[in-house]
Length: 351
Image (cartoon, rainbow, N blue to C red; front, side, top):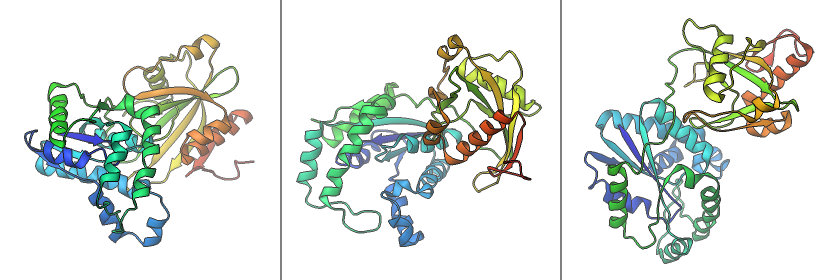
């Protein structure tokens, strides 16, 4: 099962090219995630929709896109062609990572006509597509989306997707180029580690590693949004501390000589679709300058790493992970481990 995700700015011609493409790729089906956005207009209270600037900012939209793609491919098989602008890297991580967890390969292609072409196409439109709530979208709103596209292209998008300059191409010619890139393997599947979604509660072990300035090592996974600590799920029959050592070696190339000391145990409440479980953080100690400069990121699981202060980590980590880090640092200072439930210390341990 495969997804051909056709990305690009508004006005790039994604949908028209996708309609041509399904005639060129055998056993392919078109799925437009705008349908999910339109459905949410009927499911959610208007106030909830007004709270976000874009339907993609709704977690339910991203989850439904993953689930709908997976369900459609299970029903039909073959290839699903998905024309959808996707400019926020954390949303790309969440959606593509969620599909990878379902063993669904994603080929990410970007239609990238020159900006002058984009603006000319927008200006030439006689009608403006309706927004998910059914209201007409103003021309200016479409122009306003060019800047986020430009920023994404300069920061991460051009490195993540297979680029096609479609400035002088018709929708059919664009579809032919896409089909050729997919068929030849030039547009290869995204390198995302396929981490199966858990079927029950899990135990995960993370390891905090520090540099000589007492900054903590964070890594940037490709398969989920937000930064993280080195670590992962404890395998059946595996000791948590040893799982942390194994994950550190696999993710960073650093081989710890001693078992790390426990800093924190946090019980994560099950919140569907997640099952929750125990999250442990260990103190892996301070790396010397040579070790700190020699961090490696083998394989496609991680795209980057950095050392961060506690304050910097607050802007990088999702809130639940930052709370764990904050309390783990307090435990490290006082020399005794903490037990948390849903990120909150129990039985007066915060003192």
